[in-house]
Length: 359
Ligand SMILES: Nc1ncnc2c1ncn2[C@@H]1O[C@H](COP(=O)(O)OP(=O)(O)OP(=O)(O)O)[C@@H](O)[C@H]1O
Image (tube, rainbow, N blue to C red; front, side, top):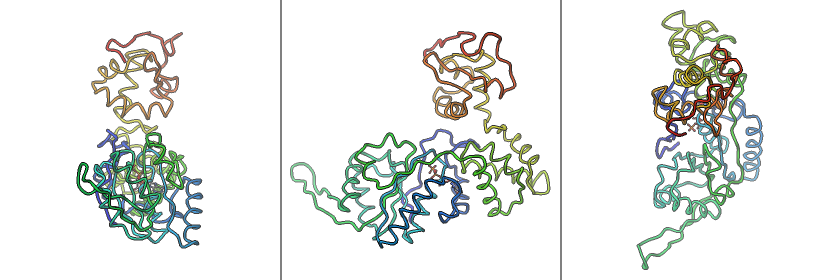
């Protein structure tokens, strides 16, 4: 395997225990926890079945597999799947990311050094520069690039033949990809958040690899707080393991997992301190809203972007908060989750407090 650069994430939630982006410790441990084959890859049944067909058919034909686009939130297994594709095709893999390719020349250098059948994993493909993207169109379709030599009127294009390769592109936002790029992928897979039962299987598998004894109730407790994301499940497992080792006999059960995650302020639904601060402000200070984002951010003492990009997406996904044209509104589930009673006759819009600073 060949890493051209470390894949980066745009997520601003680095350093959070429930953040979906990989931190330094994750990167060190993840290699050991990654499933190595499609059979070992937990969940995503449809994607697995479809990809299995694509790869088997290519192998039977003795051909290089079609280009694959993987879309989905961070931490759902896109990098892992790209490595599995290479392993199943018995091909080497080269890993790079969109932000690392700012010039067409950067891409030309990578493409021209690929071996026949090699898998090129391009993480955050939506963040590649435009000229590099245009070079990629031709490379994907014709296995050829035009390298421009010189500048201005004297510039000449030198065609360069490439060996057939498989591009695996990963993006958190398939909608941001220009259609000509999207259309050049032979197979597109959208990765969904994992169901609790699937995360339990991920946790049991990782616990075995980490030599941690965990029972079904302990795995279920961690799974319920992992926000549908294997990376978070693995990270919480490691923190629970620390707690079990220091405070008990090292084995993990429901009580140990719950006590450990209480220390780390990750609640039963996977909300952390920031998520809860936002909800509490919305409920306790603004009667459940609607309230503007700026007002809410001032109330919790955080930047607008932090509330909007780090806390809100999960709260919205969980059905705890709604973004409306009049401002942020708590749902009945939010009141229930914090054990609070909505103001009588209130509900959304109870206080009618608007946003002093605009939304
Ligand atoms: N289906 C799965 N079964 C078991 N483990 C998984 C699965 N999906 C992901 N994981 C584990 O979760 C961690 C994160 O996965 P991975 O790095 O592939 O996510 P990603 O989608 O590429 O994230 P990013 O977008 O941040 O690059 C890895 O340790 C991996 O082993």
